[in-house]
Length: 337
Image (cartoon, rainbow, N blue to C red; front, side):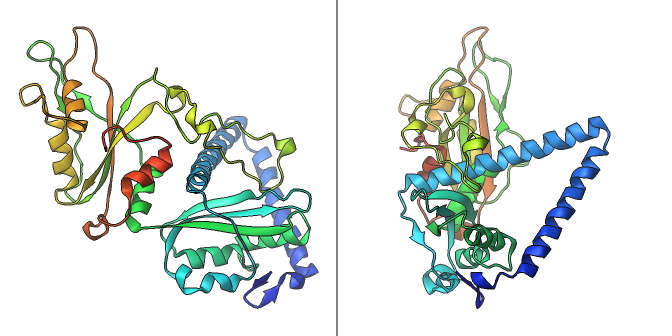
């Protein structure tokens, strides 16, 4: 394996010594943790555990996307492969995998959405021994933990990258509603701060008793005793079809593209609907939101949520945004047909 002219065989004992010192320094942090008061130590551990869980969930979601589009693994041979023209300036979802001398099946080591840095540059960092990511891979191959290293990628547009950001990084905002007026009609109360700019937005609702497919369902945490270093399991497409709603309480039902109008204008048009303006000819998301305004005495309407992200207008027409989000969440959007 090559990296900027150096080979794996040139990974010297001096490098190993420096690596051991790094590990020793890392242990010092554990000693400092032991000296912390119990309360602070517990909070620190809980915070790190929560962050690790969130990162793992995101990575599992990315791996599910890669698996759902059935990409083939490519054997890594030389880091110069990633300087090729077709990789140099593209954004992509990519995964790094490996197998061993004992098990030919390729398993994931890492997966990422490269939405800010071109794919070619990002992959070179994972196969360059001078980079932390590449050092890990080189060490595991040199120590014969791994046999071969592989990669796969799915090219994405800027708008698709922002769509995945909308799903994975942006929190839902609950929509408040007024008290019933005119007997049994409520009005939506949109929050302030919705941008007057183009972008993407999603509408969802909370439903606790419905069953729904989700990419992270039924994925049990791997047994640490049976897990190969660096191995991450991928939820199978079949398993993703059987999920209880309790694991994904807010259901995506619509993805909107604010290209001609602003995000604020689009959301206002959806949520200004009420029984006075409702028409039986309405279908889709507007009909759903309007019908949700009519409630029985003592019964609350469905809880509705929104999320949005700003995207430059020139980028919004590129890509397959609805299909991109559907692959990421693992089920179809009810009102985008």
